[in-house]
Amino acid sequence: MASERSLRANEDRIRRSGRRSEGVDQPFLFLVILLLVVGLAVLYSASYAQSEYDTGYEISTKYLQKQAVCAAIGLAAMYGFSRLPAAFWYRLAWPLYGVSILLLLSVLAVGEEVNGAKRWINLAGIQFQPSEVAKFTMILLFARLTKGFGGKARDFRYGVLGFGMALLGILIPLALEKHLSAIMLMGMVAVVMMFVAGTKVKWLLAGAGAAVVFVVIYISFMGYAGDRVTAWLHPEQDPGDTGYQILQSLYAIGSGGLFGLGYGKSRQKYLYLPFQYNDYIFAICCEELGLVGAAAIVALFSATILRGYWIALRAPDRFSTVFAAGLITLIAVQTILNLCVVTNLLPSTGIALPFFSYGGTALAVNLGEMGIVLSISRHRNQRKIQEGSL
Image (cartoon, helix red, strand yellow):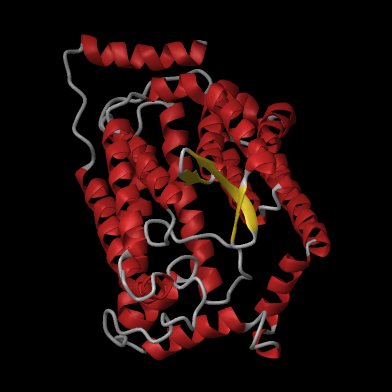
């Protein structure tokens, strides 16, 4: 409760000083909106052939329409969250953590299977992935724990067991869902946040070693995951099955050349490259926009991520700093993993490209999370609270 009182004290201090909080960080807002607009444009180009095929050549905007609706929802969430104080989220950390675990467990009982994976829940006709909510909840809880632990995060009891037990509450249901990509993603984000919190590097290295052992054991029991590793190492050995997707992705990237074939002129999107509008949408970017266009998109992501970290570093209190850093790290890790998979630097993980890949839940959640970063940016030029736990 002392941590929550310090957040409220900061808000009271601002009110007593007669100063209004600043507006949101305009450069960050512009970068996020630009990512969304470019992402929707790329999605339309990458998906219209699949849309026409799926609708008997009647509708070319099936996937774009659904994504646009979720984008509108996400923008509304971004605006609403940008006006909520950090203390609001601090109070919700533990309740949302419990809700997330219940949602993840409910997938095992009433979840719907899509593309061979049972990771979705359908509520009143609305389909969403609880894992997207769980990612946010983990970051929120870690931010609260970081503030609460303070300097004690250097101790094994808090910096390892404290964070580790909280993380396991979410990872165990994900393991039961066989959702390896989400486990890997959340594990990486958790390590970064633990490092920021002050957990000793030796414990993080030990945890990384344990994670590698877990992944090896997991893959040895999961045939499909083992196939992905084989396809990654030697896609040419089975070009008609396990290696087909990555080979088509590389063909798309290679055929783009320096300046690409032109927007809308991809050949691989005509049902050659599977999931061309989802996990492998960046391959279509490379084919149509070439190396120059692909580099520009990577630069746009980089600028957004760096500006997000700039905001986090200038937040007025420990909780806000770690919370914003965690949300930006989530975008950064997702982006890096997706680009590495598409270019065959890593085996397929099923991780989408933020703001670009088709997926309504992920897009709405990502935009809502950016709204929280914008809220934190309102206090970017205020004096930091001197917290004894620091």
